[in-house]
Length: 208
Image 1 (cartoon, rainbow, N blue to C red):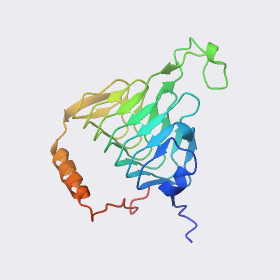
Image 2: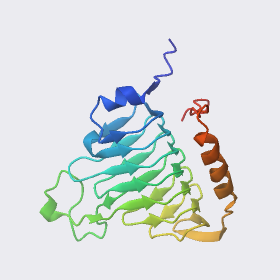
Image 3: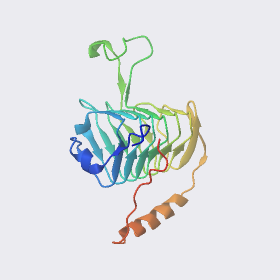
């Protein structure tokens, strides 16, 4: 046994933990922190790598589509909900916040303070199909990332982004349009998977 590799839970193990739903070919690293598993729904072909933290307790929720990868050290703070549609993904160290404290000084902050004294800002974070977020980027509450949009590493996203753009910066700004060639590849993949003798396991060669 390799002491430096903690491994992944399989979907059969995960279904016994009490998730809202778990699809086929799902792998979650054993050293992740997940709170509120009863509020988390996971589609098919999903991999969540090492040291990710997902918080979906109380009224929070997370819905993950199919063919989704979440790189190591990501944070999904899902008090007001996080949705990731099919083929979307997070590179290493991305932070998604569906709630945040008010930093103006008009309210007290942090979760040890009673709610009536805080000015928490909230709103669902949603990633469209084929949206991808680069390493160490931060997405703030009430933001929708359009289908096919890519966000470069180290970006801060404070407002919703239109579909099929490439964005970068703090705050993130559009640099150019993104190619739609990947839609052709999706069609080919779907056709390949429809063949009854075919299977498509998720590679563990790049462990986050």
